[in-house]
Amino acid sequence: MTKVVVIGLGHFGMTCAARLYDQGAEVLAIDRNRNLVNEVSDKVTAAIACDATVRANLEAYDVGSMDTAIVAMGNSFEASVLVTLLLRELGVPRVVAKAINAMQQRVLTELGAAQVVIPEEEMGRRVADHIVSESIVDFVELPEGYSLRRMSVPREWVGQTLGGLSLLQRARVMIVQIVRPPLLENGELGDPRDPHAERLPLPAGDVTLQAGDLLDLVATDEVLEGLQD
Image (tube, rainbow, N blue to C red; front, side, top):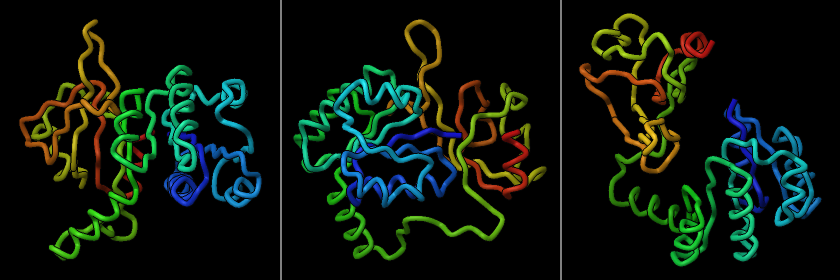
């Protein structure tokens, strides 16, 4: 199960936290404001009222063990910078931060945030895209019983080509995308969540699956649960 900490419970942070929890992630929500913490407490795994700019508080709740951290503190850029630095020091593999302008985006990226989003700008682009082309959609509603999920490549698939596996024909499994981790200088595989990871959309049958690959799959919930066992 993916573990995510969301720091800052404004509209953006609260929406992210609740949505991640609905999608099956283990979510820890943190904010100084106890009222906001109480508001989200029944929508996440755990909600804590504390000052996230204090390293000891993050250590007390084992934030360093999280897979991803979302820094959604929109009111204080200084606090966002400090929290981003602390999260990187604590070893959180992936930090996603909120910014309000391009300068903040650049600073947070240089501090080690894997992804920096400007919500208002992103929403503006989506609205513009929809106006220009009604064929652009944000998501596809799958039939009941089907899901799109990201999972690690099963051990028995490693070293095999997609054509050889014949997943669509044999198991009605469609691979939408392969996310391949970068190769580090020491010869080890990096994190597939690295922004420099290779992405193979709609891979052809001659693509060979490798250890460390992440697969975006569409299949029945029953089949997907069996693959994750």
